[in-house]
Each structure stands twice: as C-alpha cells, then as structure tokens.
Length: 383
Ligand code: SAH
Image 1 (cartoon, rainbow, N blue to C red):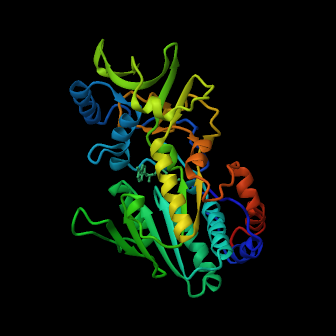
Image 2 (image 1 turned 60 degrees about the vertical axis):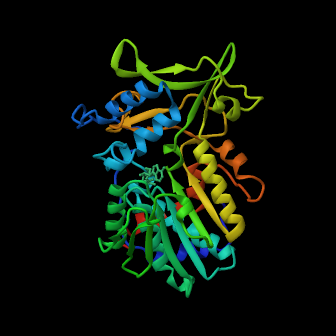
Image 3 (image 1 turned 90 degrees about the horizontal axis):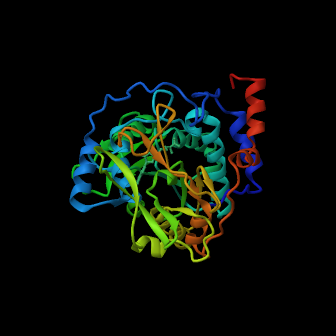
C-alpha cells in the first residue's frame, strides 16, 4: 500500500538504467482490446456440470463461492488449468507488456528496503505471479544493483494457487531447475534457485510464507479474488446469488435472496449510498495479514490493480480471448474479475500501517522515473 518515492530513488534509477540491457516490448495491447477467441466452444463443460450438480444439491450459491469455484477449483479451475496471459491467452498485463514496469518496481522495492535501514534479510513476496515476468525483471534490477544490496540475504517467495503457472514461473526464474515437494501437504510445494543463487519458494497461501522483513507485490491479484454482490431492494439489502436457470437446465442465472444473508447483514455499511455493492472479503483478510506482518516484521506492500474508491457498482466481468465475456456463460473457460475497492482495503488494513494512495499507474510510473528510462531507451536502444 506504499507507493511513494524515497529520496534515494534517483540514485538507484541511474544505477539501473546506465547498465540496463535492451528493452523488450512484450506486446502492445491492454486487457480490453479485442481479437477473435480461438478456443470458443472447444473446452468440455466440466465446470458447468460440477456447478449444476452442486446447485441442485445445495441451492443457490453466493457470487463469491461461484467465483472461487470457477477460478481456483483444484481440478477444473480456470487458473489451475490455463495459461491465460499474453496475446494468445485471455488478457495481458503490464509486466507482460514491457520489462520497464518490473524494473521500476525493483527500484521501488530497493528504495523501501533502504528506507527501512537496509535490514540484513529481504524477502520478496509476490502474490499471484502469473508467468513470473515481474519477479524476473525485479531480480534483474537486484543483480544490477548488487553493490547496493551488499551482504543482504535475499529470498523470493511466490504465492500461487496454480500448479501449471508455478511451472511456468519456475522456468522463467530458475530455468527449470526447481523441484516439486515430495508430499502434497508440504507448505512449500516447489523450490528452486535463480541463476544468481537466490532461493525461490512456492506456497499456496500467504499464511505459509515465513515471517521476516518482506516487500509484498500484488499485481492484478486482488481483482481475481472472490467478491460478494449485494443489491438494494425495497426490503433492504439482499445478496445476489447464482442459480440454475429454471427454463434452461444447462444455463446459470443471477437471483436475489428473499431475506438477508449473513454476508449482506455484515458487509454492507449502514450509510452506504449506492444501490449495488461488491465486497471482496477475502481481499480484506489478505490485507489484514499483510498489515500484521508489516507491523510485526517490517516491510511494505504494493497493490496494483484496476480499482475505485468505494464508488463503483457492478464491475464483475469476464474476459476470454481479450474480449468481454458473460460471467455465467461456459464457466471455467474465461477469466473472471472485479475492480478492487481500495477504500475497503484501506479500512481493513487498520491504523497500524501507513496506507498511501491509490494513485494512477501513470502517476506512479512517472514518479518512479519512467521518462528517464524511456529517454535512455530511445537514445540508445541497444544499452
Ligand atoms: N501478476 C501477474 C498475473 C495476474 S493473473 C501479472 O500481472 O501478469 C492472477 C494471478 O493470481 C495468477 O497467477 C493466478 O494463478 C493467481 N491467483 C489467482 N487467485 C489466487 C489465489 N486465491 N491464491 C493464489 N494465487 C492466485
């Protein structure tokens, strides 16, 4: 949640950008650009079958449970089965567009570490690392600024729910030299080492990451966490649920609960003015864990995402082949996402940590010196 520029940052920038290698532009589109969807209709509807049997057995489920099942079910979940990032996937993210993004975050991380008095231990913890590109760009900055890090003991900790993506991350970061844990229940389910000899460990949950001074990065992670949806009605706040469409047994529909649920009574603020609200309780829990760790062990967290300040209403949407996709259609075949409510995350973080921002990505990157980096690239693209 800290995104300010320490006074040592400019020196660090010079160090990185005078010795940097040529810039790779990974792709040139954003998440909203359109192209045809190559695998439309090809995937077996196993997730839909799973959901309809569940709904027949239990009745309607909350949108949060629907999202959790669709995205992270250990067998058929979207993140568990797919490599969705990049031009051939469903969406693309900043670290996949250009290495400059990760480089600037690397500078921010070092600046935070220096501002904290250069602790002997530095844990880089990334939540939802995708293809591992961001961590790889950050680590390149670390090697270029080895003289700054000196004797600090640096380790990398990745929180990733998808075994398939963890293999991709391992390939990017450790060149395939990683090993899976022998037993399924081990907290660290994969271990490896970067070319520079830094240990890299993979975990399913943030709780499993060891304590110690840490810088946490979450880029487009919080928007993938399950949200509850609530609708204002004449009778008060009601929760939006997912059910089987009674007219078409192989289709899903949204329904509103006839009476309040525990979630609608707990999560909606008494003075709420909007008519529709999305609450990511799981995101709140993770922010509380981050805040507690930062208070107890020192560190900082940077959360970068699509978001708002408690002003937006219905932002729940799907992406497939870089196109908007109906969230209830062929579940498991498309990414599901909802804008992050930063005002909610700030409230749940509590008073023990300083929360700065949110600022736009443009402001953050400009403050971090992206113009200097770009000038360097334009004047001599080969350095
Ligand atoms: N940070 C990357 C990837 C974003 S996609 C980028 O910006 O390119 C979301 C990532 O979070 C994926 O790696 C996905 O597998 C992971 N993820 C989603 N839900 C998760 C959860 N509940 N726990 C851990 N990882 C999760």
